[in-house]
Image 1 (cartoon, rainbow, N blue to C red):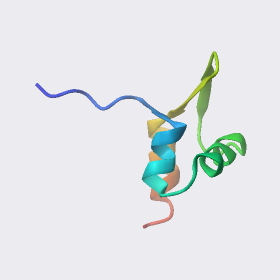
Image 2: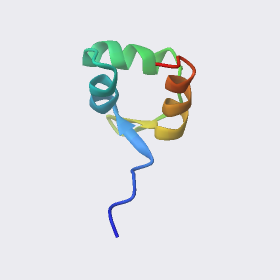
Image 3: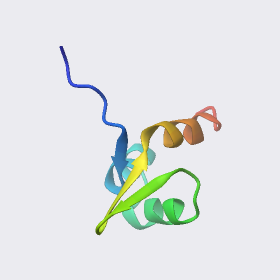
Length: 59
């Protein structure tokens, strides 16, 4: 069996997915476009809420 998809993205991962800079990715997180959780200094973004947010743009 392969690895399951992780339930969360890092800020760097959403920056890569969207082809934007890290600071722009973290601005989206701060604006609350998708669900995220802070664990210590790390931020993790809900894969489900991010994917749903991205899907609305029909890219």
